[in-house]
Length: 255
Image (cartoon, rainbow, N blue to C red):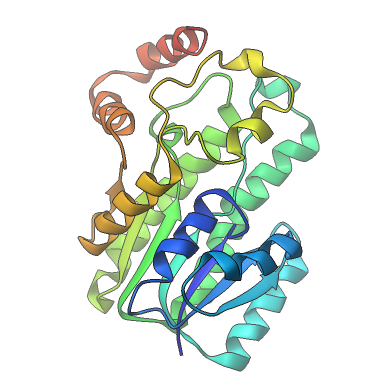
């Protein structure tokens, strides 16, 4: 069976990927992974193909072993892999709870790599892998520093994987959006502390981010910047030294 395996599928970008990929002729079933089982059960009503809900907390080591066993037993063909599970916390690095800091690293980095590596034997020529990074991957980011560092790691990992899987005819794309206004990311990141970033101007919407990134994946681009702001940021970060960009971002987040 040809499947799309999507982590973080219960909400936000993961849910929107499930909705749009359910209409992909290369997808017969969606394997939806997330912690919230009730949200996964409700996903079937939003998509156009069968959904297999897989309630797992990917920050837990036993979840990775469970997924490995499931893949070995079912032996699906993974035509689409989307690693969208992740979260961030706003605030100075010293002010963020240590548990939140470690969970960000575990989910955004370790879990994404573990899931991807488990899926590699089940990818085939024409399969597509989308690692959901962030425009924060392009430079150190005051006010969201640990999250930015995790996304820089995933961005580098995805680009290397893109190169290594080219001979197998597999597309790998690092997706680097700007703020997405219609997901739970911003409220969870703020956690009642909205002062870290005063505004989120020109924020994107999930539907547009997913549509543009899927098009970039089809073109086998190794990095997708699905929007004007993240595209400009990507270009600017190539030419402006971090010694200037970091304090500039520190000022802009207060605007």
